[in-house]
Length: 186
Image 1 (tube, rainbow, N blue to C red):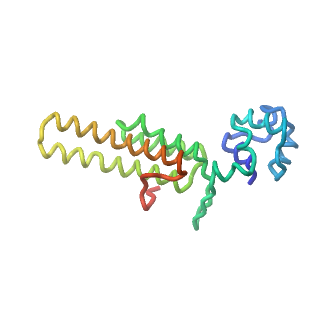
Image 2 (spheres, helix red, strand yellow):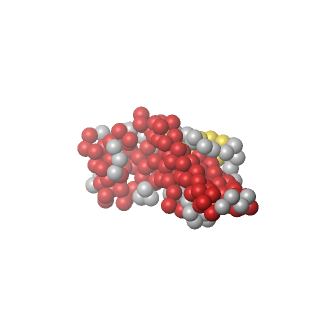
Image 3 (cartoon, helix red, strand yellow):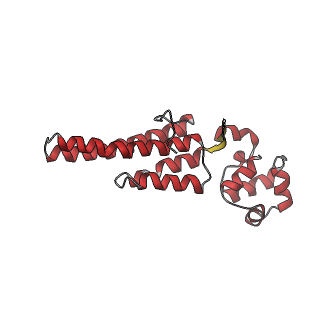
């Protein structure tokens, strides 16, 4: 699959829509998607229309920005920018646990990022959502006072924010997750 086609599909654009948005003919877009490298003016206007850097359209940049992961049942193209968005989408919902799973799950489906790393991120949120109330209940049963309960609640919420932010940094720098599970729950 060509780099242009991948980027176009990630933005849910047809060849005709990209043609109108960029001013490049549909036939030229088809040629580029079948293997011809875009150059000069065409490269500039396509990059501008897709709101990306020009070198991201070239095949050399493809391996840095995206990686294909193959498993026995799955071949998935990982867009690390979208992976970070999916990961960070859990932060606003750390205090509303079901949404910290549902929102990234919906984003995974709508952004067409059903890959191993995205499933790992969502599985990590599922585990956190299961463990957080258990830890909280144990803290309440210890009867160490209201201040302890308040600090425990804050600590539980901050632990999730820390995991999310640490994974976002690792995705950005190393193209992998810092905190992950050895299994997927979805």
